[in-house]
Length: 152
Image (cartoon, rainbow, N blue to C red; front, side, top):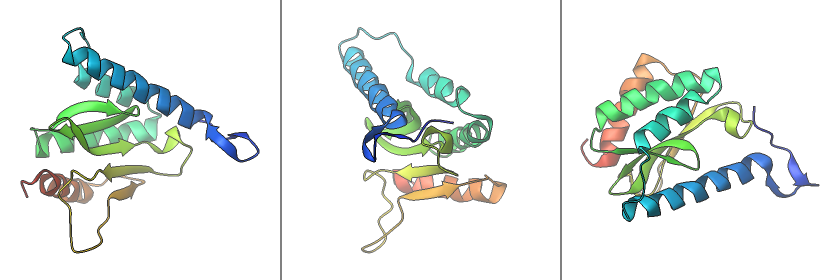
């Protein structure tokens, strides 16, 4: 489990937060290299590697979410975002899974960014806690992802 201890008496970033920022900096560097044709990395493989590196409970959820998301919305591009398995539309992260162990929380979260078309009045959820993934939840998530992409 990642450490959540603050660097000094409640101030600053945790080691896990610093690691996530370093991961994001690497991802941005890789995106720039890809645009200039200098990248040989496969974003899908990066996602699969990120999932494989998770602790068992998070990995089981992330593997199923990957299958559900890529089946529900095959137009999304797999990529990592702050080291999380993420799925983008037109280069912008639409949905991601934040494993619980990464920041020492008791559950992982399925999150949606502002490009997701989930608007419902003046307030709607953009993140869902997932402690255990069921078949019914998988169907609900598939429908939510399709809606977020604009296909549902």
